[in-house]
Image 1 (cartoon, one colour):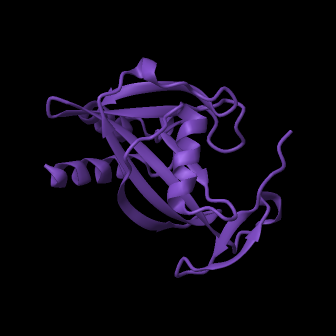
Image 2 (image 1 turned 30 degrees about the vertical axis):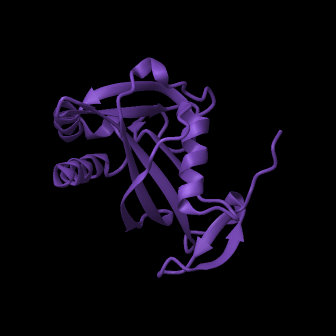
Length: 175
């Protein structure tokens, strides 16, 4: 069994003020999260890799979410964390990351989320879901995903439709 590492705790300007184990965190703590979108550009039409959270997860069991995500741990940058999470959760290594945005998300747990995208020509079979974290993976057409997240928001993690909308806008600006 691996020892749990401490999460990076930050202030409202995303400056590191300490580190805490997850079970010691309070609702007042702000921590860092990194997320990754894996996108396939199929002749100008985008497909997105989405991951279904394991049904045994405490938060959002069975819901669909981004390609990979994780809490930034002590002595890690946002980028180092998402490279680690991408390898662990979906078996992706060596991808070129493009930073999209950093946003503050509030709720039961407050955190800064740094979002990245990587664009390549992968197939679904190129990815290996982490058994303990990921129930299933799927490659979905961007427009179909936008439609489904709007019509069936309960299938997805919180704010997922808004995140997909932001991804589409970012990709359109890159053209």
